Image (cartoon, rainbow, N blue to C red; front, top):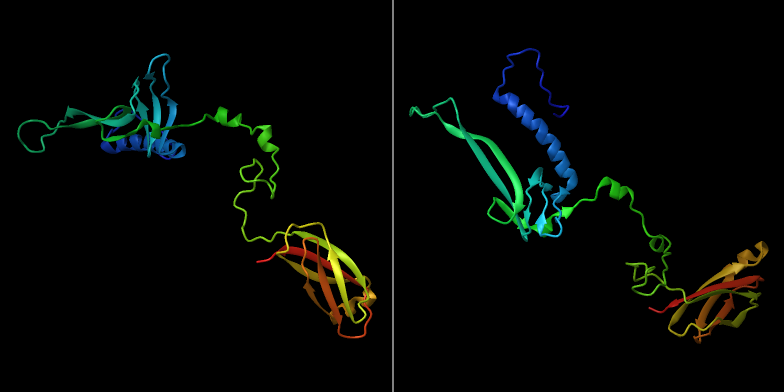
Length: 257
């Protein structure tokens, strides 16, 4: 009986009323509902296995909704059904005063078996077998799965493919740094890089000063790019003042939208 429901019996002559039996039944229902809830809606808890070499399945226990039900041994069928049987008895009571004691249900028995005809029927394939705690504790991923390193550039279908990658992330075709020094008014510079296989790209440019003393001079520059080739483009610089630069140009190439 659950710890939340306990009978206190201090002496003989205990008054076994309907409330007493409801307490006993309720305590057991709470426990089995918890087990069924943990297992899932349609699961095999124990048993229900083929008895080789026949097609007879052994008995066992299954969880269905909030119930734990016995599963009766029998020959395989693609359907299973829940049977509900009621046992009646004569009560010491005559509610309609016809001189005959009332006959009412006293025991309700529910179980599952192969076949149809019960109050609930569904495919046997719906029942999922639970792994035991021992089986779960012994589970380990194979080394060939544990040691797979995801690769952003892995081919589709490869074991190390990264799934659901954002499609709008920028791909960097090339990157580098070129030393310019002092622009001295205007200048045209060819920026070379390994072959990227396309001219449909956009250079992204940033300036970096080689020394703290010339850092402010980088603000005096404007630039444009042109003449895109698969291995180079041209950077056009113009100085707006007379300051002296110690200029580095950082660049990276991204596909043209």
